Length: 527
Image (cartoon, rainbow, N blue to C red; front, side, top):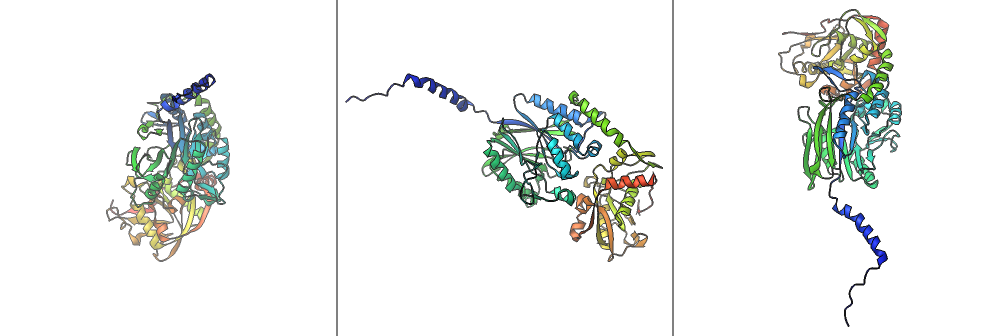
């Protein structure tokens, strides 16, 4: 029997076969990796207007918007997204006097895609944050913030997702949202474990069809000691499957920003590191390419200044409206300065004396200690407006009182003296009220305060006596390296809800005319 060949295909099936092949061929032949561009604007701090320095303008939304639109145009057909990372809408007079609304309006006009939540997003309280999130054209993202009952706050999303490109960004809020905010402003919130939150977000993004995922975890620094908490957490996040690019903070402002590829589990992992020392106030942004092919990932910085970028004319009307609306409020007269006051970050100064005296009186403490870096400007002779007051304390803060022994107070004074001549350590030198002392700059570190010279309210310090000390929450929480409170294990006697900015303004208004000078509260022996 002769073997029969294949039966001929019915003519009716041929058009269907051609259609199937025509649809399948592009999928089979398209080997291009998925790729998007992400512009990361870290710590904008509400910088609405440009700042003039060295003969040019830096930052401000008009220049920022110009830089963002230029980068998007240069990307061509590659989709471009702009992300605000931490502390976006608090930190400028316009932000303060509009409770963040002016900044959100400008972010909408600039075309932001998402905002990764940072500590200062809660500075205006949760109710205002909810209103701002509702007004924004983009989501506020934080995968690890939940209500204590396990539900997610209505104003937060775990991630940003673009259905068209199938690209998602997971955001992790830093743990410092609790240490840097009043309890009332973060009441009812809890932080989910970062890995647990990331795993859940990746699963949900994959369920929605995501093919490219970035993770923003700038509150976790890369490059710390292997046994440091940040290193342990970073490694745990690197073990999560499905993340195409990680965005971490830099462990040191001296290290360069940029991209690094590491191998984990036999797979390449792309890391982006950014330092808060450079990426702030919109003066500089990072441009990254995120790709499913690690070799196609890239990173570069974009300086935002008038020598490089043209202002965006589309924002002129918005900026004019904001400045006009806030002008009357900011220029309102509060008090008058009888003389020029001086700010010094490494010595007693008249501006520090004025502020510390007011805060000590308000707190009822026996003495008050305030890091010099909290004070950003000094009053000149003449009128003092609300804007002058804001410029003095742009980041606000809150008073904390606690009981310390004389010995513990000496430890704080020694820490304070260690900042003199060490600008890289920060501006932690303490301005004081209710206490006076002499110190020796040439003596060994932490042996510089002359013990017998320390007086509290004109009485010699007793190292064993307990004193009610007032300070600012930043210092009490360990800011500027002041670990003495934690080491001593002391609890807060009271947290004051009022911002030190409001306390300062109200006190100046009551005084009418203010005068302060250096009184010899802090003296040196050998200079």
